[in-house]
Amino acid sequence: MQIIKRLVYGLVLLIPVGGFAQSSMLPQGYKHQQLMDRLEIKFRDSALSFQHLRPYNRKDWVKFIERTMPLADSGAGVSAVDMHNMKDALMNNYEWVSGSRESFQSRKPWFKTFYKVKSDFALVDTKDFFLSINPVIQQQQSSESGNDERVFLNSKGARGRGLIAGKIGFDFYLTDNQERPPYFVTQWEDSMRAVPGAGFYKPFKTTAYDYLDARGSIFFNVTKYINVSFGYDKHFIGNGYRTFYLSDFGNNNLFLKLNTRIWKLNYQNLFMELTPQEPINDGGQLLDKKYAAMHHLSWQATKWLNIGFFEAIIYGRPNHFEFSYLNPIIFLRSIEQQNGSPDNANIGLDVKVNVARKFQFYSQVLFDEFKLSEVKGGEGWWGNKFGFQLGGKYIDVFGIKNLDIQGEFNLARPFTYSHYDSVANYSHYNQPLAHPRGANFYEAIGIVRYQPHPKWNIQAKLIAWKQGLDSAGINYGSNIFRLYTTRPYDYGWSIGTGSKSTGVNASLWVGYELFENLFIDGSIMYRNQDVPADAKLTRSSTTFTLGVRLNMFRREYDF
Image 1 (spheres, rainbow, N blue to C red):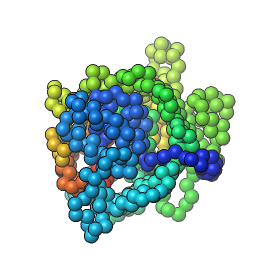
Image 2 (tube, rainbow, N blue to C red; image 1 turned 45 degrees about the horizontal axis):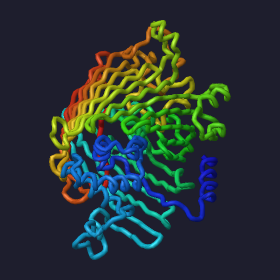
Image 3 (cartoon, one colour; image 1 turned 120 degrees about the vertical axis):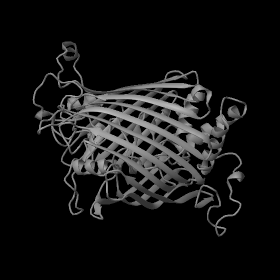
Image 4 (tube, one colour; image 1 turned 90 degrees about the horizontal axis):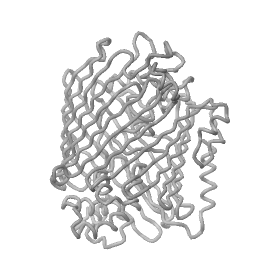
């Protein structure tokens, strides 16, 4: 991706001498994500209306809290738990707090050097330089019914963030992981030749996996309104639990992102270098590359209404970027047509509505291919490929503070995200870029979250689905890696066509924050999948898990 690297170098040279203060980003699985959702609904502030583009900017998050806390103190329906979480969020973004920071100081730092601030193991805060470094640990031990092998996760590493002269931000995250997941995840790995969320991996103890998770990015502003990010990480675009645009479910990737926020608009350009579907990587070969260009434009039409427009091109060339897709203005599809329409083009529309400071409703639709005349014909043409999402959130249910629920419905037509060649499908490193289930499915999700006390979190989640799978080697459109040219016929397609698969994934998690960013977790997950035509995929299991984690998001198996 030499062109992207050269672009970054050129943009660095264009930074004005005065510069503009630049922040690092909030990490994946940020512990105050639910607080962000609650405050967005309560205050309908335009800054948080753009938090569906993740990772989100630390500086903007802190400025929102500082602007909001006086209103919260005056009785704006903010609970004591929310107030505690807001103060805690300020401490965890120490470098951007403009008020007093004395309350963040530890009374007894370790060896007078470590944990001077309660949230940071090692922190340097001096003129023109800020640096925070923290250890990362996650240990999980599980027992799965019907599985004689021990299920476990062992992660350890470090994460950090910093600022140079208040103008260049950076962050990094590195963990070494050994994992033996529940059996259905092992089946997924055997089928996809990928560990969910990871890239290159090696066998560990015969039936487990060993892999690194390494991420790092730099950030700077070229004007007051335009932010540039360059690095290797994950992204998420969407308001729901799932997304049909871009998910953080899969592996990290090299990216260049330009984000412009001005007036009531937020416009994001994202260029990515990806890896096509490959055989198992033995570490001794150079893997091919493919590329993606994505645009998302968000318009805060009113305090309560946000409208977004999305487009993406996934394509392969002989390992080089397509320069015409560097156009920063939306309408990539028109460029793709000028190039002869060889690439995988997708467009989308999303809407978010905040109502009565209690509710949020959201929807997302992605069109891979669509012909209105075929829809009117009603004969189930294969080429009408799209995904649709409808969901809602309700906070402080029935007046119970910090009890929140979320419901979501997703569907994707057969062959959505697939392409006529094996390179341009909507994937990266053997994993979907968007929904983990691929295509040809219905899915319903229900989530209950409750924080009765600042240190306690409870979450119950139910995911149910119906999907049509391939059968006897016939392509029924669920596997996005298969060429859509291998379909058996052109008409008669509906969601669920193929080998019928139904499933339920239900879980209950209880977490206790023993010390700052140190959690003790306990969970139970029941998963049942029924595929009458395939006894190997038909399985029911219950998994009990106990774990401890420090400065790390919780590893979940929610598909």
